[in-house]
Every structure is written in structure tokens, then in C-alpha cells.
Length: 386
Image 1 (cartoon, rainbow, N blue to C red):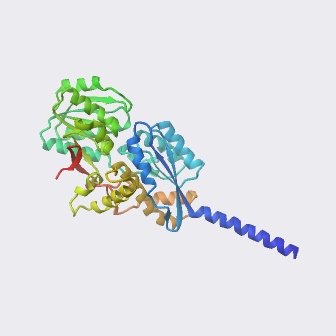
Image 2: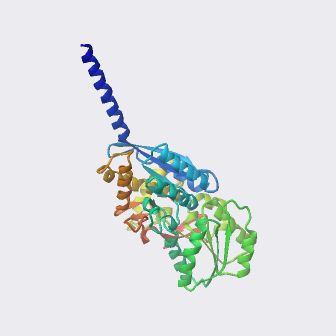
Image 3: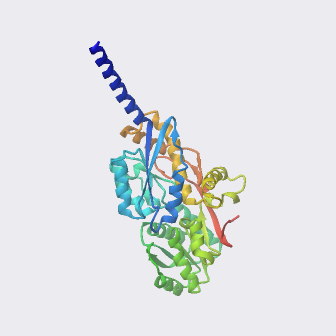
């Protein structure tokens, strides 16, 4: 009898161990790196808020989101990414908020073979699709994609000369590279090219050089509230030409900080920014309004942000990929991470808040012209260019 009891106890212990292992397999872990503090906080906070709206269960598996703040710092972003993969054993990384941090994270996710969906804009995050970028995807529209919209609008509105001022980092450099190529094709001459840091409190020297060049228009390649500084300085110094911003400023915090100095500014943006103004037949209207309504139900009317939309779209990509990945492997394994990467790359006709996603082995963004509109700031509001 004693031996029988001992045997039964061992069997129960073994069963408990197996069930415990099965329970861990049932859980999918997602590591999230956002810039919730520092210069990029106005972008990172709505992204962080959006993570709370994401599904807690997919295909019968519970989902845990582990969110870390990189404080808009590149070194911290890398440290957080390595911790999430090596210690927390996440199956996917979502992040980071800004281009420099996302680029710095590429080496880690490639080394540890973990898929990553960036919420930053630069095309250099997913191009060229080399061994590092094999594991990386992104949700925001490329700078090259948006530069096309800006240069087209400039050409149509008589702009012959333009000055450029952008962040002194990968975001500004990426925009300078793409915008310069397209401006040349449109016969638009760049008469000044300046830089400023996200943390700068003055850009008077750069603005004086720009004004002395007397351009028809100025393009400011910044993101979040720091992008308001050059615009306010241009207005203070009496600049009367056209001013363009990038989709990096498409949130209400920028409007608040820039104030009346923003009036008349042109920018390309994702459809989410003006979701309610989109015509009924727009293919993105329904998916954009779904996110807008979900976010504002929790955080209040008028609180939605295009940057939160980038996080939402990452969640939609992840949710669509999980069922396919589960056909090949279980969460918490190297095989599942690879299957998840493969499933992300195979995404087809997925409506998200910023467009319709169709990815392949040569395109880890998957957005087309349906993901952008031209917008003007009028009376402190975003107005869709009809």
C-alpha cells in the first residue's frame, strides 16, 4: 500500500509538473519599449496607454504585456530590450517610439532571434532588408512615403526653393536623405539644410540662416513637441513663407505647444488623424474609427493620437500572426518566435488604423498610398485636404 501511495504521489507530481509546463506554454509574452518620459513623451504616452487596450487572450492563449520606459534614451532602449528577451523570455518586442532607439535595438533582436515591431518612422528601420532587419517590422509610414506627399504638394503650390531643418539624429538624417532626392526630381531647390537636437531650447542661429536664404517654404523634420521650436522661432523672426511639418507632429500636444504659430502649416499624416473627416468610401475609415472610439472611450473625447495608433496597429499585426504561429510551435520557444516572424511577414490585406497592410519578404511595412493624407492646421485643428 505504501509503495502504491508513493507511486501515485510521484505520478501526481509528474502530472503537476507537466501541467505547469503546459500553463507556461499557454501564455504569450510581449515586451514593450516606449518613450513614456523624456523629449519623446508626447508620442510614447499614448502608445503606452494603447497597450492597455490590447487583447489579453488570443487563440486560447493568455497574453502578458511587459512595458518598460526607455526615457527617450538609446542606451536604455537597448538595455530594456535585452532584459525583456533574456530575462522575461518574451516572444515579441514592440518598440521603440523613436527612430534612434529602434535602430539601436536591431542588433539585440537579431542576435536573440526575436521579432520586433517598431513604432518609429524611418525607412532605415526596415530597409535594406538585411540579416538584422529580417526580424524587424514597423507600423508608421516611411519618411520616403511621406516625402512624396510633401514634395507633390509643394510643386502643386508653386514652391521653387525650400529650406530644411531637422533633428540632429537618425530621424532628421533619414528625412533629409529622402526629401532631398524627391525635391530634386520635382525641381525644387534646397537652399539651406540645418539641424537641431530634440532637447535644444533655442534654434535662433539656424533660423536666421534659413531666413537669409529666403526660401519659398521650410520643412521641419522633427517629432512631438520639440518640433514646435523651429516653427515658433520662424514666426517670431517674421518668416512669411509656407511651413511644412512631418507626420511626426500629428498629435494634440504639438498643437498645444505650437499654438497660433502653427496656423496654416501643411503636413502629411496617417488617416487616423482626421478619421471622422474621411469620406465614407475611404477603405481606412472603419478601422481608424474602431481604434479612435476604443481609445476615447477609456481616455476621453479628443484624446486619440496617431502615435497611439502605431501601437494599436502593432497589436493588430501581432494578433493576426499568432494563430498562424501556433500551428507550428508553442509560446516561449525559439521555434514560436521564428513562426511568429514568418507569420508577420505573410500579413495580407489587414485593415489597421493607418492603412491596409500587405507585407512580404521585401517589405516589412506593407503600407501603400491609402496610408497617407495631406492635412492643414486651421484654427488649432487638423483639417483634411479635400
